[in-house]
Length: 174
Image (cartoon, helix red, strand yellow):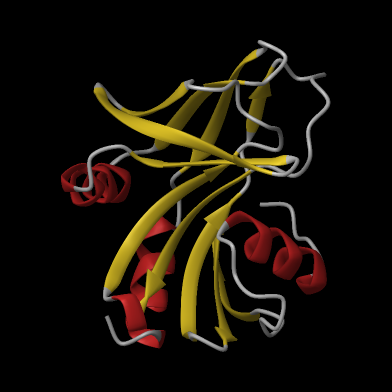
């Protein structure tokens, strides 16, 4: 996975999940093959997350901000392993995102905040099923449509996902 300075990750994470501006810079908990684990503290409590950048992006030359798939633990909200897509662009209004691991497909809803887009699992009951599929799979393919109408397909390696998730769960006590 490409490494980004912690300050950039802090800004990305804070923007993608609407953390208050007072969020601390993230602390690297470990790098696990293609996934990294982090923790940060906000006025509302500690948050831990695992993230990865895609290994391939289609179309390759589409202009986009940094792209990530992240999975967050929010102990104060009692939310464990909440998946999120950060596509590097605003989504087309009303569009859906699909994540696929093997033959399993998962629907995500989209939300744009300012110039940034993000997507979360449509049915909360599917979150556990998605995480299980990711732990047992080799790649994750995320497809979405930008505000300009460009269909994108981002392929993530799942090498290291289990170790990264185990690390964030331990760090956040979940």
